Picture 1: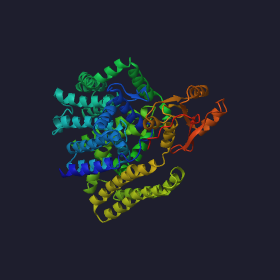
Picture 2: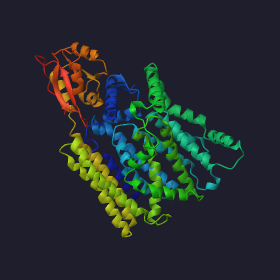
Picture 3: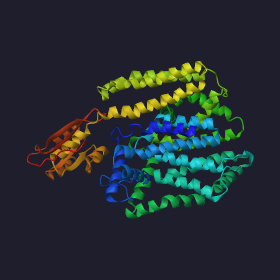
Picture 4: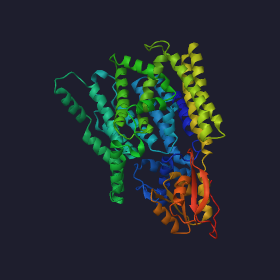
Length: 562
């Protein structure tokens, strides 16, 4: 119980503190939060809508969770992000449960303290996207597998449940993952379990034995049951949304947002095979300081047959299959790596437990080198952050002090380790990760949010006319739709279309950049249209302008935008 209370206290503090203190970020947060709002307004729990258009990017589970949060707590940034935060807390508890079964209570505790103090996992848990829910569903799948299949006597184990209901429970968790993110929720967890079973059951055979082994292993996983259970969990919604949209959602989601992402770099998100190893190191900070000694120790352990060796192989399959699949895909994003973070945390937790107990066969200076790396990263961050802040966050250069958090944590850990207080030294790394996460995603996000000026643009829209008709030219941010509470037509390239839109109504308004407005002005736009508002675009070296007719006698409406 003490372990659970400690895990809950840490993960809840990191995930919930200041959760609603900043406006919705980037493009995905306002899209997801706005989609949930539009679905509620329509009374439609089946078809995702945003900006009065079908949103076929993701399945419905994220929208359902945000809609439920809105119904209970009302609409706000906090309620939009709460499902992700709760899913992250749940993932941390599941990680502890898996660790207890695979290793020990101590290793499980360290894994559950490591996970919610890693940067990319915390970010996923604090934003309104499907990523945290997918991580939870994948971890739930692995937890159910371990609960139902992990042996007490390895010699007699098949590493897969013999009862149909236990297998069905595993695939039901995958069905939730399919509702959270799509086919990846079935394909990759199945591939992870299948790869582990192929290794765990492997026996030396003849030239055709490998094929037979593969077929036997695949069939033992009850593939027909898998398809049936996933279809039972996720199928009704996919059938309903396909029927209500005449197949449009199904076509766009599976072809454009799954197949094309795998075979082509959508929105320019292309990178080499180095991408996910680098993202793993960056996203798992500060615990990535132990990457080299962890790798050395893990592969040393693999040389000795034991039940713990099987646990490490299982976790390596989880990591390797997940990262390998997305490395083969052409579109690459940092968030795609996060569902394997619980597995990395479990390996790290087992390593840390043995490191504290002096049970690892490592050069004795590795921990000291790791702590010195943490100090160095902190000092480099403290040196570079003022340069970045001076350009994009004038007046808030003091945020550079966040770089001193890892430096101070590394110094503390180094001193404690030299005093032979090993548990305290490792705990200081956890404290460093927690403080850094709060500094970046709670305090830092709140401070950076003050530099957003789009609300002035939205206020000008509502002050100009009571019935605005708004379009954007070559620039559209979903946050304008969400906070402006009005649809915005997107004009991607045609200057003639932009001119025709402005001319169609006295209430027509156009949002574009200052550079694009200069090009429009030279292209035959009537001189009656002027700049009504001019603001700096958030974190970019350009300005946004609102174009329309001077208000004249048009009735003004007081702004309610914040």
